[in-house]
Image (cartoon, rainbow, N blue to C red):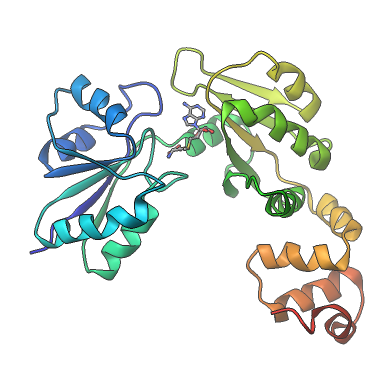
Length: 276
Ligand code: SAM
């Protein structure tokens, strides 16, 4: 019989934020696949758990999966953990989950801490609908496109950022957000936890000496702002904006034609004929 694949959330700072069920599963599984085995070893030592560890991180995810799947097929139960928080959320996990499903292996989430959700609920911004952006791309073109998407995002946006890149990302956001509210969630669940709220200029001026882990939340654009921003785009940018939202060619043409008040045919002939 196949073993089971558990995705176990671990604390994002405060070690008390681990569930009883997570500890039970970590004690019971045959093997723990960890993003950084040294980090996880510290966590296991703290809870007096002794268990074989195998490294499973972003750079070896594809390679390690086959090995882990064959162990699962041999009946071993495996827990995947990341350095902090929920596996698969800007952390390894996605690849093995897809492969486990293809191989009829049961996938079981063990819920717990996640920086994005905890920052969101304490932010004071809209929680009814939100978009998780994870880390913004580093590639210049991809980043510009993502920033365009953010400019028109009408839902609360959640962005992860590494501490040393925060200032740069805030400067990029300054170019697109104007008056929208921003919240920085810093060191959530740790001693220096704080939520810094304000507009982009206030946030940038307060950020200069801040240290530690940070998450950025951005108030959604109003419909009016979205329309105003869209009107400033070239047709090419307009096309890519909807493409990045996952719309197909037909839907994109329909939307652009409505936004710009021109016929669908005109858009098709002028700009889209050669696009895939
Ligand atoms: N899988 C994790 C989760 O469930 O939240 C996220 C991992 S991602 C590699 C790390 C990023 O999450 C950090 O760069 C930061 O943006 C955010 N983060 C993690 N822990 C945090 C904390 N305690 N306070 C604020 N942000 C945190």
